[in-house]
Image (cartoon, rainbow, N blue to C red; front, side, top):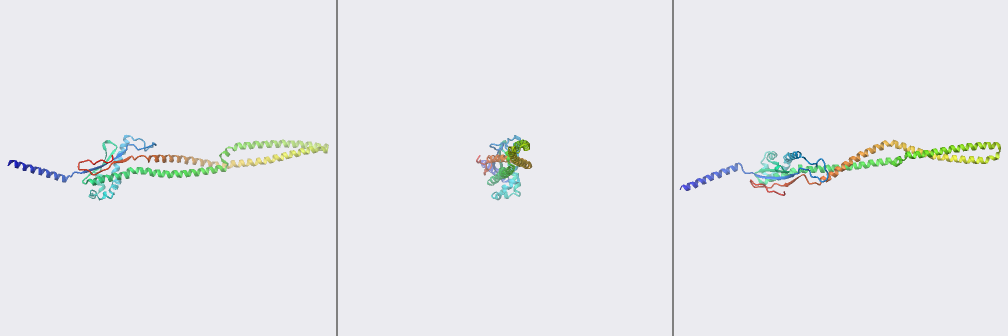
Length: 337
């Protein structure tokens, strides 16, 4: 009889404990947890070029970068993009919240695991499928709005620089064409460099003509004096002298013709020099413009090449584990590590 009373008491006690546990569970039901993980590289991936963006970061700089990423995950831009997902917006977990963005901001847990490069985005809730869906939506929104945005920014900059490079190439071609035409107008660079030498040669010939002319005029004067003396003495003896004077006059005529040719050549040379002198400031200005344009073009071309290479590198932030529904008290299965 006493044994039966003891069994009844034990049964009642067990029933009370079980009832209390159930009531406690109803008040504080066990939560379902889901988490996604991303690898946030401490160094910007690079292939060949070492730029400001690809230089090695110090420990303090990387910690600051980590803190920036933790903050960006929970920004309104990212959370709003996650909640705009058509499937997520129908979750009962979301519809029950007065302010879903604020609720998600307060309950979402974002941290780097054990001082590593792995960033974990986690959330706990009553509905495992919805918790996992929310974590994945936030993770994808972060990748789209923040992580992938940097890659997009580089592509946009590459497009802009490529167009700028093309404009500078056209401008360089135009200015070089203008300089070429201007140089051809004044006879070309070689012609301009030969101007002084040509002038010296023309002046040498000109001086030679004058010397010959003076000599001929002296000879003619001497012949004319002989002619006068001969005519005074014997008239028939003047014919050879007259013939000599005629030859000297022909030589003088030829020298005068040669001098005229030299005068024209000197005038052409002086005209070219004056034209070159008038256009020299314009040519020098064009040369200076071409030098500046070419320098800018080279710098833009180098950055375009650098960006082309950098865009082939893997992303600095990449997903390594998506969130999946988990059991109460258990860890979510890992995927694609």
